[in-house]
Image 1 (cartoon, helix red, strand yellow):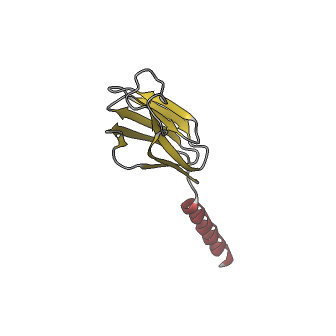
Image 2 (image 1 turned 90 degrees about the vertical axis):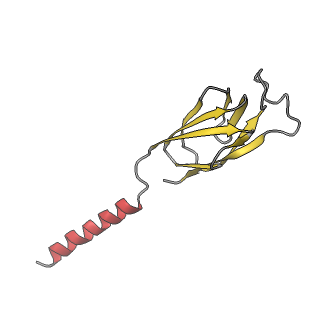
Image 3 (image 1 turned 90 degrees about the horizontal axis):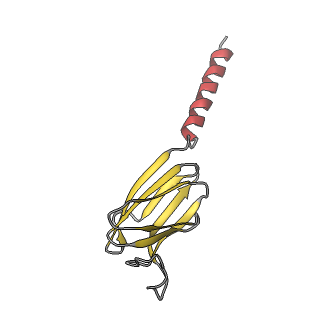
Length: 128
């Protein structure tokens, strides 16, 4: 008689441990980001978990092309507008966020730079 309640208790404990240790379901992550004075305002390390749906919503005080390495996303952000990088975080790692061509109105983001882009921060994709 005692064996049956112990087995049920053991199964319940295993279920609780699995739920507590699991990574959970993918989430939607939306982060509003502002570039001001050629720097990222606030935290310069962003993060999500593998499988999350991510929206990085960019604004800037001057025209700039922003590039998220590892995901090959590159878009021009124009003052007064919001530009969104929408993607699924399917690659784990530590990825650089780089800015090119501050103030370049014609979209030629390498024209004004002699030494490459400016690192704004990093995007970390953590295991689930």
